[in-house]
Length: 622
Picture (cartoon, rainbow, N blue to C red):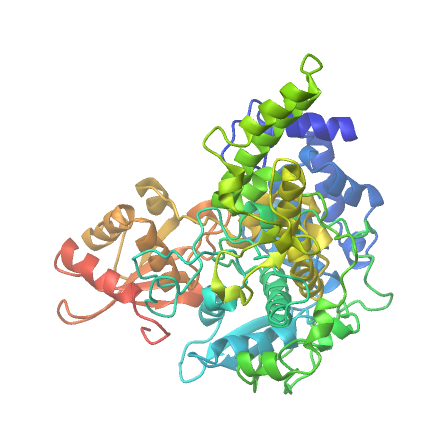
């Protein structure tokens, strides 16, 4: 098995941080059609899913040999098995409903099929949150409350009329934006900022407000006894719950995580258990959340009171109806207050072993990707160390000659170690982290860097940034994620595939043919209407930023699902909005992807009004 995996990784897959690689072989060469077919037959058996009786080989294949199964099939297996029995049954019903909607010969349709697997629907719970400065604290409270629930989370904003999937998707979008704030100190950043304002959903923000990295976000290293680390760990715990809940409820998030971070997410070995094994016997409705650990209890936001107990996520097997949405309004303090005043937040940072669960997963290429300047500097030091080893191993040189060449080496190649005045300390790239330096070894400030200890300096620096300095943050993130479902289920995906699961198509792309095929004009518009064709042309001409804004406006999410606009469900529907003159603005119903578009007198006016609408915040344009 090791040899087979090595062969695949060498010939096909190379998830390098740059995400740019050549593929000598098509991954489909390794796919097994027979195994794929057999796996799908097992997953589509209702009895196997309802009684968590899938054969062990199914889990073994997708986790240990994912290269044998296409991504699409593994994604279906993940949705069917990772979230517990209630979600498995719901998934099976959704797949069956989709199949029922396809055109079929009536003669071959079994009349009794319509109610064969129908046992109810997943319960929805609705929370009301405010916008503004308190939003992150409220979001933390919402996630803290719902992390262990298998019910579907729905959000509405205080003082706004919108309900349903549109505000819910904006909630996820806003949380993703808030977690990118540079002042939180979560991610590697530097003091140099661009000159452009950024708008990630809460209006334009000044340069430097959000962390921006070409290679994506990666945790900033901290001394593991730092006082600020308690707050950072709490936020990583929240991030874990947030990403877990987004996968559970199938909500895409616009969070540009680095491939190195995604590599850690997809490498959690955990315990290779039977599919659905964590479900207790007799619990056919809900996967009970395990008792909250001390780490969970020390979360920065206390659990607020709820108007309903989410002890049941799916209606009974008799098909009784349930309330489609339980509404609640949470009371939450500001996250800054709760993090600074809570007496037990330190317990999140105490559950750290001497060896991290991700030790050895990241290497020098990851380091250079997430920290380019320091990475290139260490690469130069490494080249110097290689030359040093060559000199020392040369048996043709005398000791005096070796010493002479080593002395010249330390002052050549434009890199004079003595002039650098470096010691065994790590200096962070920004003041936001709250510490000025960190000793890489005891009394590091008193140990100068020279040619003798250059290898040790390289190893300690990389270890601090890729392991020791992020250990508690990653433990907190993993614990928060596991509150929703085990992160080890992501092992069946590569880092790039995890990115697609979480974020969909990060840069929306479509062609005129795509839009004409997968956009439905109705109620006043047809495929040949000038107004509809103007819209198609405008969408094709949009740049990446404008496309993301349009998707946020029309669907509530700035990304497309995997597979692009062809897999957007429901389809984007364009209807004519009866309005007088060219001053009216387009409006939307995000829950059903409904764009209400006036028939403007010209394409230029339509473009101006559409771009104006996409910049509006909130759910007022209905």
